[in-house]
Image 1 (cartoon, rainbow, N blue to C red):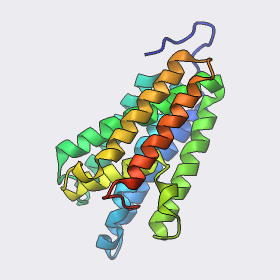
Image 2 (image 1 turned 30 degrees about the horizontal axis):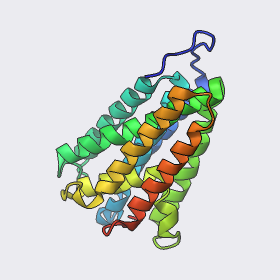
Image 3 (image 1 turned 45 degrees about the vertical axis):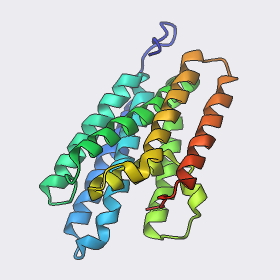
Length: 232
């Protein structure tokens, strides 16, 4: 959507792509294998959706920031999502209850995460991937804490996180119930993606950040106040 500047050359830092592999592929794969090998796998099933969400986030956001291209991050996140879903299915985890809902969620979540990574590449230049790593790490820490200790973190904090929106949508799709009860989480991912790309398109005009911030708060409120909201 936004052309790469000829004065700002494309870079492929090794550390950035190592982070993509670690956060977007290795960590989710290890988590899925641990879930499948657990003695009481049913108690670990709620960990599947945040694992998939964080895999999409790590690959899409850091990948787009490292490649400095929206579509690179989107394509990478979708490939990772497909691969993780295939692995989960192969080891017997319940991921095919509603394939259409899962596919739609993956596309929108990947697009949203890649948009944020692309903005980081615009605002941070060749160091934008470092910002992406910081954001991914922060949201992952909160999401994993909420998963490990339900009720410890307030619902309003979780409702602020796009990673949680993706988690909610993926969890609903995996349950076979479809996305009806978490429709605002899906809309929030899409809405913030469009607002983020608006900022990237007009960069370096800083006033556009007010549009993105307002959109993020509005989408968070919709997620929080929807009747079906749940942190898991």
